[in-house]
Length: 276
Image 1 (cartoon, helix red, strand yellow):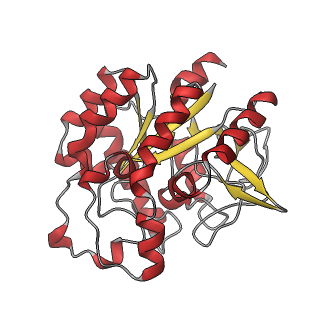
Image 2 (tube, one colour):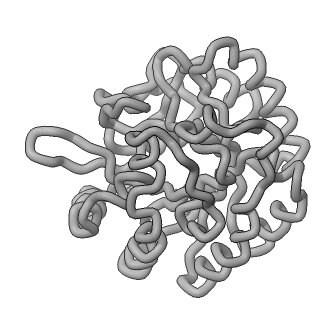
C-alpha cells in the first residue's frame, strides 16, 4: 500500500512564483479544479490526503465538506504556504495551526511543510505538532536539492522528534513518512512527485515503488493541485530557472500520476495508519 498526498495550493502559492505576484493579484483559480480531482480519485477507487493551504478554506469553506464526504483526509499545509524555516515563522505557526483546527473542526492530524522545508532549523515544528495532537508528518525527503532535503534521513517511516529529524527516536510521538526517492548512478534523488514526477522517466518511479514494496515500505507520494489541473495555472513571466522548475512538463503530470494510481494501490495517510 502506498500513500498519496495532494498538496492543495493555488496558482500563486508555489515558492518560485511568490516573489512575482502582487497581493492584489491573488485571486484563487485552481480551487475550481476540485471536482475534476475528486472525480478522478473516485473513478480510480483511491483515497488521498489533501494537504490544504488554509486560506483556501477561508475563501471557500465548502471545500472541506467536498473532500471529507468523498472519504478523503484533510491535512495542514500552513495557512499561506510559508516555508516553515522562514525567519520568525515559529511564533506565527502556532496561531496558524490553531486557526486551521477551527476551520476543520479538529479533523486534521497530518502535516506537510510547504516546499518540504522541514530541516534542523525548523525542527521546532515537531513540538508544535505534538502540542496540537497531530499524529504524523510527511515533510522529509531523504535526498538533497537546492530547495529542500535531509539526505541522511531514513527511507522508511519512523518516529520523529525535534532532536532527531533524520532517524528513529523511540520517544517520538509523531510518525514521519519520508517521501519516495530513487538512485541515479551514485546519487539518491527525489522520485515522489512534483518536478521529479514531471521530469523523470515513469519507469524510474515505478522501479522505486516496486523496490519499496518488496521491502514492505509504503511509498509516500505528493502531487500539487495545480499539476492535476494545469488549465487553471497561469503562465507567469518568471526567470528562466524558476520558469523551468515550475512549468516543465506540467501537462504530463496528470497522465503520469493517472498511470501510477492505476498500476499501484494508493490510500490516504489516515487510512494507512488505521491499517497498521
